Image (tube, rainbow, N blue to C red; front, side, top):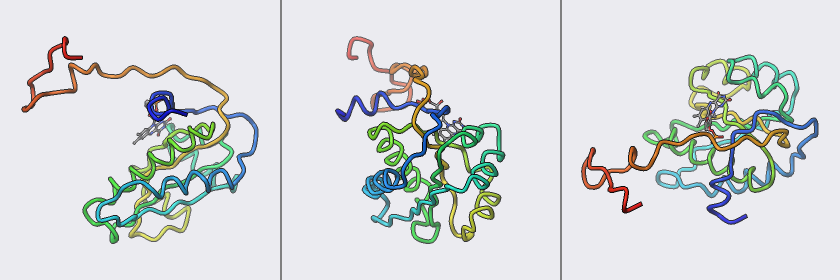
Length: 174
Ligand SMILES: Cc1cc2nc3c(=O)[nH]c(=O)nc-3n(C[C@H](O)[C@H](O)[C@H](O)COP(=O)(O)O)c2cc1C
């Protein structure tokens, strides 16, 4: 898949076919995620592959937004070590998470990022994660059973400034 096409066609996939995703495929995507950049190349990330149906169910009950986990083949929890990258662990973890998501997409797998930051302690407890780690993202993963259109994006005029905040670009330069 061409690089830009991959970036533009990724979607949050919340409905999955009833088909198991081989662990090997997930390991391949994690192998790609290892190449995400990180502050001082600290690589503070770890990946927990959750296959146990009981654990998946418990995670899916954490919030309304976590429901896609209930019908996912498996989940991957990206955690970041605060001590290994004290100022940047969240950013580093998010970069690895994003690389992972894009790799899954390039492999034809569907996934959605599930919010973790309001449930840090519960997630760590459920998965035996030491307290110096923060769960950055949970991905519900499976073979896509939906093909959602792109969600709306803010227009460029609203988000790009030249030199100083508020100096909008001319529409002719886009
Ligand atoms: C930090 C973060 C947290 C998110 N949390 C959830 C969530 O808890 N549940 C969910 O269904 N989607 C969640 N999403 C997915 C967003 O809703 C989705 O990325 C956004 O609507 C844009 O759609 P797209 O991913 O298809 O481009 C999250 C995405 C991010 C980046």
